[in-house]
Length: 336
Image (cartoon, rainbow, N blue to C red; front, side, top):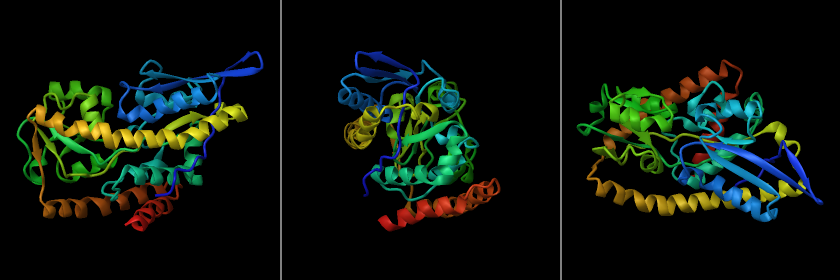
């Protein structure tokens, strides 16, 4: 797997002179709480602080600066300098990166997810797409394939998803709709309440989110091999802030991205996944596994139509959709 390419710079909007040093302080808008999904940002803040002797600080806020669905808007007006968001929250605002959310792409590792994301992030069409929001992409938040936890009777076949209300965004939502489920898009913070109140009967998440947002507390079942896809949740910076970063602070930031991502992946593949199996067992959650024939049929029914529809829809708006799709699928094919 190719090493992640550092191609982004970060800047500070406000600077304070302290002796001969220039102190820079950034606000970073996240949501929820510190968890596997935010470990690269936490590590980035730690490394930048160390490398600049405290002269460049990332102040991380979990929900205190913005609603997660409004983080891109906040970046666009300079309300804060750095933020994390998920493409599926507002596909019309970032159509270029939604190619990474298409169902059944065949991504097999977090390392591969990083490489694909960075390649798409550097594409000129993607750079221009995010520039509409005064945003510059920094790094992805790689996530494994999503699976579903739910309440009530476990679906033993894909046909039994008919009519089931499922929290699922992006391409995962399209996949679930294809088997008769009723996908609903909502932010992660809203999911537990929606599940407890019966607004949704099932939730599609990566393992860390099922644990962090409590969806397994009342769940009765989990699909271990549905693997319809994942979501793409980049970390972005305000582009105006980008222009004012000192060379020393730029070097500290860019020189830390690879290490921050390595830390994220090691933590996810290690501590997070080590905790997942025991968490299910402790709660007596039934593990549902579908046959190879059903999974193959699911892919055939969903993958190609979803890709065709995505390419047609986004090509009509001037996005080089076929080119972006080919970029992703060619990279995946090369790794096989």
